[in-house]
Image 1 (cartoon, rainbow, N blue to C red):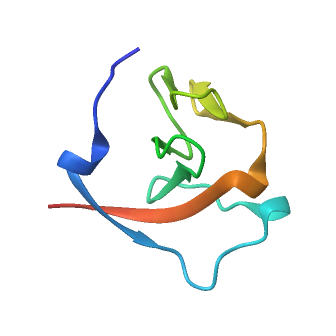
Image 2 (cartoon, rainbow, N blue to C red; image 1 turned 120 degrees about the horizontal axis):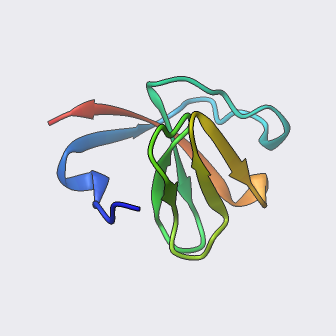
Amino acid sequence: MLNIDLRKIYRFTPVEPPPSPAELPRGAEFYYECLDCTGIVNSVPHVKSACTCGNLAGAGGDLDVKDPARVKVVTGRLK
């Protein structure tokens, strides 16, 4: 698993209005920020990715979100 701080590569903007935790959007432009550890993971990770506390973890295009209420949805654009 790569330990890369995505904030050094992307500029993140919160999705407004915030989506319901029950229906988090998925797609290449969407990232999830864990509100517990502030880790950011793509909503469709192709390489093994996880936040520090383990709330977000996935690989191969699938992401497991343990507590969707503790996630902020953001979009990312290259700096």
